[in-house]
Length: 114
Length: 113
Image 1 (cartoon, rainbow over the protein chains, first blue to last red):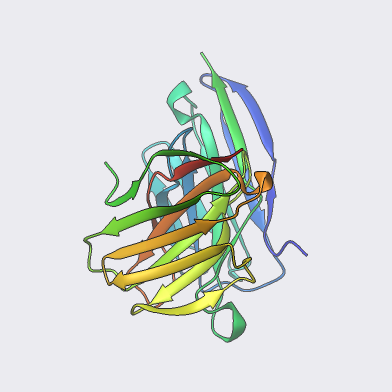
Image 2: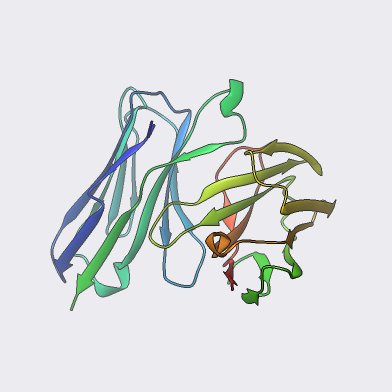
């Protein structure tokens, strides 16, 4: 059972377009992180959201955490070829057997064409 | 530049070889992780060390043997691997006791022939 459903899995767009990636779950997360991974490199943390309803902006990227802390979205405005990469959401659940384990979504492979 | 350094960057090994992957961080993080990642897939957790003690082993086959010599170093010893073990092996660290966010290295691209 995939605890974090990430969509879409693939996104191919033209430079200048806007896009949104979603992560949804039936589980509550104490925090949720977004990472971007470029070929040949490890994932790099973009943002951590911890409060229900929180919105964070990083230049052209806007991250939102759902009110119930079960879902999150990443919106990119005016995408550029440099945004190309694998985007991963990862949720941190409190306590129990989930301690120490991040739950990753399946990832979104974004390709932005010039 | 990543603050988690992994060596080697690439490794090709036969199924009878013994090799080791190395990871180093100097951020004072007390939790360190090994992940395995197949192409275009999310990382899969293998091991977690918290305060130099193994706290999580995700039912990883014994041909993978982790070691944490001190709080800055993490090794992964490999022996008698299979071709399906070919993948990107990522090391990560975090300041929390086994909680994210994670700081990843750039990985070791392992090919088993």
